[in-house]
Image (tube, rainbow, N blue to C red; front, side):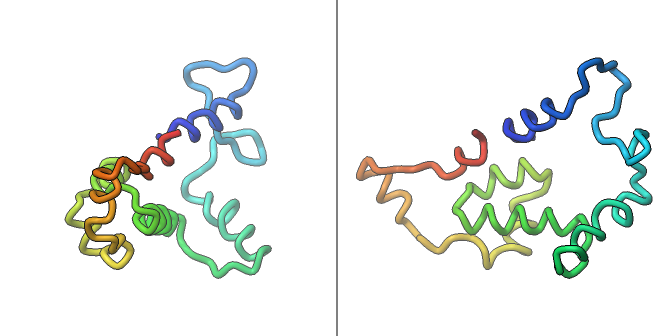
Length: 121
């Protein structure tokens, strides 16, 4: 997980916690059931905000396409998502930047900005 996500989850941790305690609980204080999670916690907020219902898995697609659009290194994304560079190229190729050799030219000119580091802070 990205360090920012770890920090957020740490903030959610109760004051007194055990090794077997769950971080994400339902309205009754019990662990969230994956079977009812989408119905109880995912679709209702989307409907309330006028957003078309989509599966939670869609967040993966949004994450990958947004990261590629912002120029994040494809190898880093593949490792982060546990998938291959080949799969990302096949399914998300239209989101891969078309700046050609511009990043290399910037590096050689001393004005490199590694965008993938933005995702790791």
